Length: 264
Length: 261
Image (cartoon, rainbow over all chains, first blue to last red; front, side, top):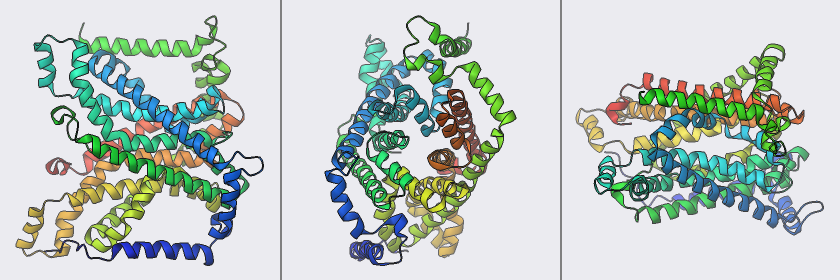
């Protein structure tokens, strides 16, 4: 038999060593500094950006703007996607009649919405929120719709037997089935909310981390590029990580017979 | 009237209403001041049809479509091969698996768009950066799916290989590869869709050809008909690719159902 991996493998120190070596190589090795810059060059620039370099809002405000748009889009997309998902599950005619159009919208590569939304809503915060809201909505809606449509038929029949109408079946059965699916799709929803904001900022937005990043790309500023890209990566990883934590916390509290164990 | 017929009629009705609002929305009194109904901003179905005709027959749009599809295809080949092989290496060498896990998790969870500027600065606006961008989506999707599938392999099956005096290579070829392949096929439609999105995004950020670059060209020329025509094209291509990917999945790994994948 193959041995199961022993917990004594010196993995963590090795990982830290790898990070250290990469960092040292970045500072002293043969690196294309026009592309990756160096830590010693980035550090003063980071301080400068944080306090507000000439012609740019301070970095913390850019972070706040990107983060705020992400959270607003996330909240709007989840709320709308969940509500419509449950309602569409309850009314099959509505679901079937709108299916080809919803599928067509879902098939558009997300980034293609950016020019359209920019033309309609301009270069401001609204476009970012709507962009990320739209992406989150599509993910949540289709997941919730699928789960709420396939809610346990026995429970749905119980509602009818007990004299409940459509409202009761949505409130007592479909909503909970959808909630399980919502919880399962949360990590990807969070990741996509951030991607949506950055997509929107990629196109000449006035401020935000994505704007900083793409402006740095156009001017070829390796320091600004590294700072904004790293911050965005960190924000994405931290947000996804905390949502996964929340997911584990909440999953145990859902009624398992309806919400089910959906972790795919 | 059957339910199916009623649904069909409703579908057609919704389509007609949507197209009519799109075409004539600005002529409803009081609506023209909203940008959502302004034909200059959202164009109109007739203008989009004319733009599609112009793009395809006069401006070589077919070449851009083919280039986008080619980049997606190349990325699929590279990303799937890489993700597949890496998943087996990781699964069979616990040290490598545990060593690389946090790094791969980090790169998988970070918003992939942040590498777009680097690809542009390092490789320019051509074919290569698009393939790399799309590969970065496909690789992780395939890698994590195959690895997950392998880790759910039943111990009884592995014991069976031993009992029949099979070595590690026998296990790899008779057990691991069919299972891994089934999980790769499960991820395949999504890999196609993500590869397409990655390609279009890189063209969008900075490409000298491809559908994404045509879209940006239309936007810069403030030609909303061109922009909407590319959106319609992309929507159709995205749908067609996902459909094709699902069909391929059903055809290529008939033992999937047996495995419950």
